[in-house]
Image 1 (cartoon, one colour):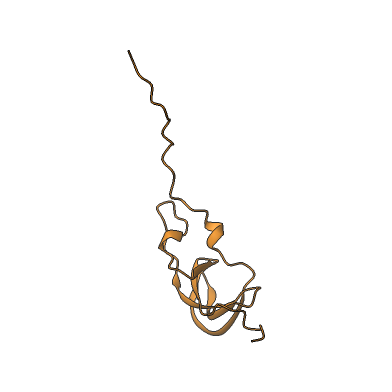
Image 2: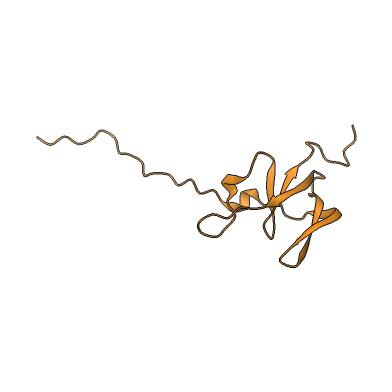
Length: 98
């Protein structure tokens, strides 16, 4: 007699994370120009809509498909288009009262 398993194994889950979760949008750039990428200047600092500040730390690594490798980001690092990596330098908005 053939027995059927009492449960069904789930398919293997993909480790791909949506890139959109790791991209900062609507940032304002400040500070010195520290380089150029694709003909555009790279500024040393960026601020998001919430007032959080970030500093430039490098260019995003690419995955096998050619997109940004979000798994290579460290805690507090975010992608700013066209593929720059900025790291958070504070946990509170710059314009927030103490």
